[in-house]
Length: 254
Image (cartoon, rainbow, N blue to C red; front, side, top):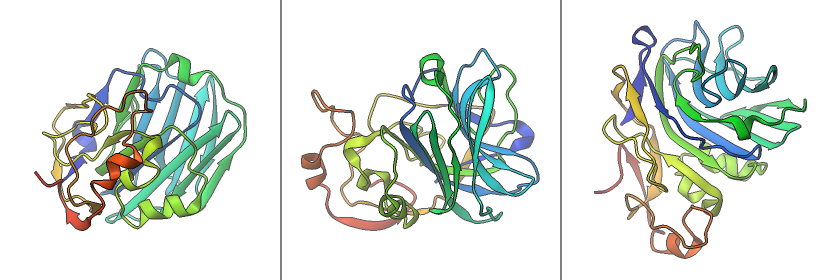
């Protein structure tokens, strides 16, 4: 199951933690838009006490692009040259390689680029929100589904890595040693990060919906053990135990 958000009842997920404490990162998710007649927020990370300090991954209603915005007072935007289509799954990914290098993709296509300098967001971030902005004047609630939220601590510049995700491989297969957060969002009752003791909280009444079909390790466990001295993600040795794959729609094996 994925998580379905209804814009009328302003449903969203949130945690008051700094989950992105660097300006070098990649974040991604699968998204299904029921209606794209208004701007729809996918992921937001920033300062909850202000309206102008954040990273934002959002659908732009004017042209149906996906935009990756970085703002510390002034907004700098990378926008895809291709558009989303309502009523189908799209893989959305954006990365920040530096304070002056940000890119965004829909299904690994339509690359949007921004090279304007934005600094200091990572040091003031205290909230991560899914399905709307998380600042002091939240707006642009999602109308549709979100699943397979993942964050890496590097810029995913390699198109082959991005294509693996578009081809519906679990984020655990893609640079696992750099993967720092992974929320499959299998159910409204299962909003756990698979790599850390982090759980998103649902607000209002988001519901379960059909999950995109994802190729997962066949014996994938609920949470990888902590790697002493490691970067948080599963190591290559840990992954060897989970080399088998299968196509699944819905959850992990229990």
